[in-house]
Image (tube, rainbow, N blue to C red):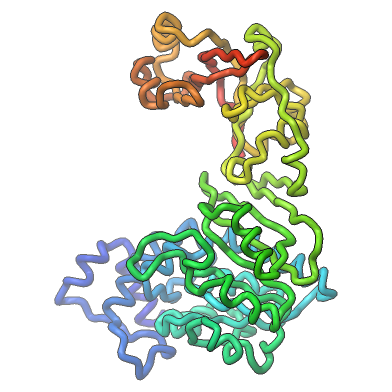
Length: 433
């Protein structure tokens, strides 16, 4: 065991701040890739110990190798997880296969960061280009990919803009099969940005040069980006979108993946990746041509046994009418994105795309029903949807605490002729995506 690995194993449970301030610690040498460089071993090793705490479950394959170096905290926070990296790998594998490359090919990642996506790509491509403008990340990547046994990665240290693209994409990577970019989503002042032209690099401003090098470009974008706006802006710079992947993991919508195919001339498809493996592919025009079904009267609730709450990716994609039509679900209201279902609908596979609840009882929302239900279900989760109070306000009125007695929903239900009624529904969670 080398001194670096010994140091990391010995101190990985220590407070990084205390390690940095300690005057009695013997700091080991940085990996050979850092030799001759003016980098503080203290800072990089403390960041590595801090990073290992965060990647224990996020990147278990990397965590299993203590000598992997994490030179900056931001790169650990922003890197892909193994789960999301695998989705990007599968997408790129699909792109390669459609190009006649069942195995192999070249992938150029122009904004590699910690390199988790490059690591995933290296398992399907003949060669992968790793590029990042941060020299410490490039040096760490040389060390890390050697430890990970990935010898088919080439390294570059350049900022990406119009003046450098031809230099970075040169030699064997002059015409890669896929160009991948994950543009930085913070301004120079550190403020989060979501428009393509505000990211770094400016994807819209360099897209024409990228498409001269490769017909296939894959972008990783913030989950906060507006899908329609992104696709419209890319269309205006002659970068037709073939697929949009909405990816959720660990209870959050994590990222959007945009596959640009310069030869594509059809509407793009939406692909939904829900937490736990739920998957749905939708023609982008399907939502606009779909219509939701609503209940005819409040008493009709008696005929339903189940409720469905869409997962994060479905919600981000806004497929509210589509899922009602496809899975024969009855929508609570036009702006109330909760659905009622029978057993056949639940058996159709919808459970992997969100949360399923069994309905126990319901009542009109009133002071009396709030008081009675709060007493009967004192330990319950609470959700308010489209009623004149927040979930916290409803919880206080019910007087309940979090627990497993049930889940109390306060919903506005739309009825015919423009009428609506606020109801309380008590349900039991059955499954989640």
